[in-house]
Image (cartoon, rainbow, N blue to C red; front, side, top):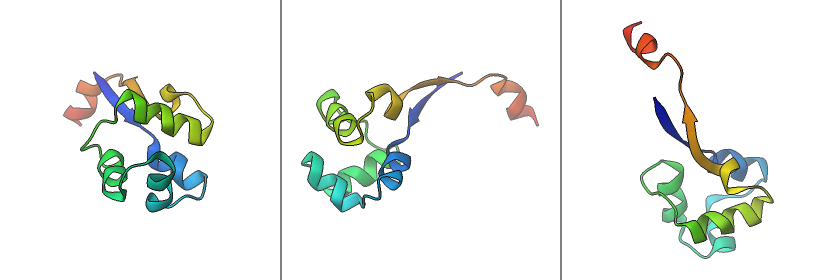
Length: 77
């Protein structure tokens, strides 16, 4: 099974930024940051690139796909 990865909150907290502070840096509202962190909204490529620039990382470090092995086995337990 493949799930999406969203490490925005982890990076934001590691950099000591509030949701409001990050929102101002990338030009969106705090509500947008909340929605992205909660997985309700998928950021555009442009916004993802802005996040990567703020955190000096690759977009793939923030967002992407991750493989979950043995997901059926975990469901049965």
